[in-house]
Image (cartoon, rainbow, N blue to C red; front, side, top):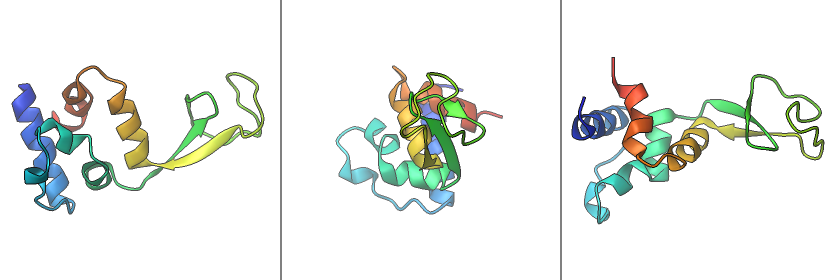
Length: 103
């Protein structure tokens, strides 16, 4: 899929999950997928456990299993925040979305 096709499919998925038509409020179309509203609709509220040093963890340990820090060792974040953060670290946000929209 081209970047445009991935973008269009991601918007279509988010709209089917409750995203309202608000693209006209953004100067650049890419800003739509970098918004909290898009992320909330696209990825939802599933919870993720993050360690203090930012790595993902399957379980909530009393101390970080990666760096040993224990105050606070973990935090629980919503899925949309987790994915928005991960996507923001990518040079091309579309590349991050690609794995969620391609069959």
